[in-house]
Amino acid sequence: MNIGIVIGSVVCTVKTRTLKGRRLLIVRRIVNGKPAGTVIACDATGEAGIGDWVYMIGRAEAALMLDPADPPPSDLTIAGIIDPETL
Amino acid sequence: MKIGVITGTVVSTVKYERYRGMKMLKARNLTLEGEPVGEEFVVLDAADAGIGDIVLLNNDGGSAKMVTGDDQLIASMTVCGVVDHYTWRGKTVYCH
Image 1 (spheres, rainbow over the protein chains, first blue to last red):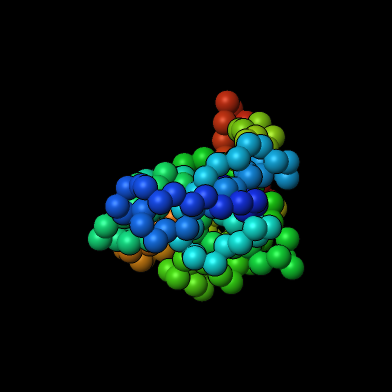
Image 2: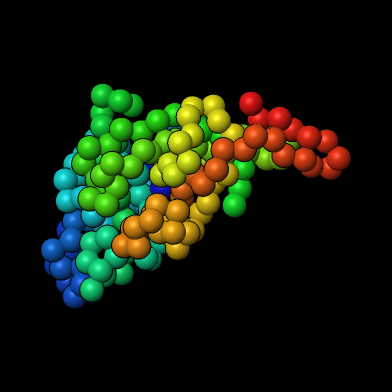
C-alpha cells in the first residue's frame, strides 16, 4: 500500500454514477520520504483531510472497500490514515 | 513473492474496518544481494515480523485473503514469512 499526503480535493458534478457521494482527494505520493508526483484517489475511510498521511491500494479491486456490490471505477483507493503522532 | 526488509511500524486508527486488529508495518523490497530497492510501502503482517527482519512479501489480494483468513479482506501486500536464510548462486545468506 503506497504512502502519500492528502493535499487537496476534487469535486465533479457530472461523473460516473457509481462515483456519486465518493470523496476524491488529491494525494502527493511519498516515495522513501521524498514527494514524487500527485495522484487522485477515492477515499474509503471518509475521514481523510488535507495534511493527513494516508496509505493507498492501487488496483481496481480496492474499490470494493467502498461498496462490494457496486464499486466505483477507482484505480487508487485510500485504505487508511497513519496516526500523525506515530510518523 | 519477493524478499523484503521491514523498515518500520505503522499505527493507524482511522482505516478500513477489516484491518482492525491487524499489525501494519513499513517494508521495502530487497535485491538478492541485500540492497533495499524500490519504494517503501505499508504491508499487513501475518507472520509476526519485526523491524529489521528479512521477510517474504506477497503482493496479491487473493493470497492476502487466505493468509489472514478473512475472505472479505481487501489488501495488496502481506508479510507471509520471516526468512531464516536463503541459498543463492552457491552461497547461503543468513538473515538473522
